[in-house]
Length: 174
Image (tube, one colour):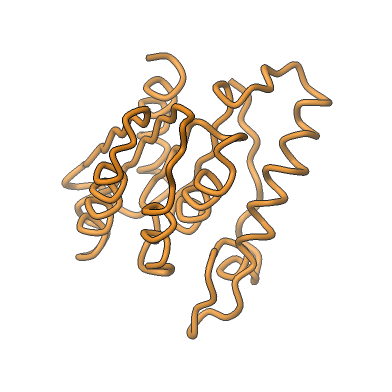
């Protein structure tokens, strides 16, 4: 498995990782960012590293806002990404993501691993459950969804680091 990490701490983080405009956070740049990942970065990685470039070997993932934009990129570019690793997604930032999920009907198989912690705030678990139900209601038979929940889990990189090996194993080796 090759992991490509992208710095996420810049002052434009909310705009770059948000798929939709938000009155509090500004104009969204998420569409351009997702396009960059699928159309520029992925081809660059495939051209410069020994990869299996087919979509069935390619995933995208992130935590918090990175989880949100990873959902969006997976929905918009199913021909590129077949595996989504979503940790503690900031679904509250862009509630319209559910509508994209409703419109998402891919004939291609997908695997989605979602993690949420019980100590992340009152909206995290209901939002993750709503996302799961949205996918399931679409009747996307070729999509497998695994939701992992830790009642004591927090919104921290340490927590996501603990979850990472489980997610990689499920997405790529099961």
